[in-house]
Image (tube, rainbow, N blue to C red; front, side):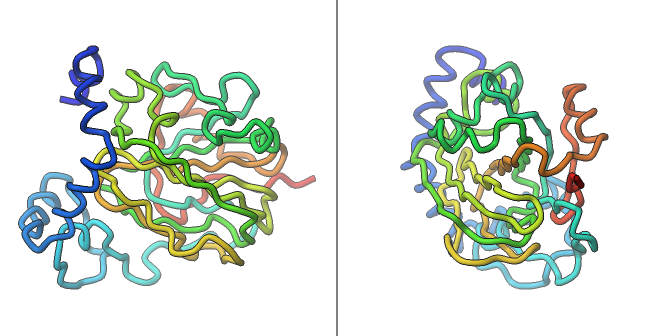
Length: 270
């Protein structure tokens, strides 16, 4: 379905209509209703979602299930301060940040400047790394801080809600079109960092309860409501090194499955 929709001109036209914020908001209203509860069990079965690490509770709607919480301690943080913790579950790729063409995703190039809509902010991260965590609907959709630190500022970029499936990424510059929000953070062990949430098809809400002050490693930052979505981290030059196996996997064209709080990079020691 997605491949046909985004491969051809008429399909991309239809996708552009479906991706409008109003459509996602309407879907979100249904997903918040009691009627949507009927979707929960088929969704669990279809996506083979393990429930052993999820808090046992009654879900009044599909969105309540979609934003389910894990049992305390089910995802342990790295014990050492040199490890960058994954902010979420997802499929991870990593890319060196350069001035021209930071990242190539299924044939489409993106730059830090176009993602951030600021050449001045993007300059801070030249020579660093970009971590792209693509969440499918089956993933856990709450996300946390990968290190402790403080907010500098946040920015919201209104847009639409295309899917982040590979078929769409190949057909159009999704990350440049989709609604997204990012925070410029000063972290305690990895320097300046961009933490960006990108909404996707049927994700009408990126929910970040706060946008200032101090935060701690592993503390919950926010959640995505129904649909797929993406988290992007940008780091400074020389601050850290992604795990070699993740770099190698990306270079071979593959995504690496990761879980919330899993170590994905190590601090560069001078």
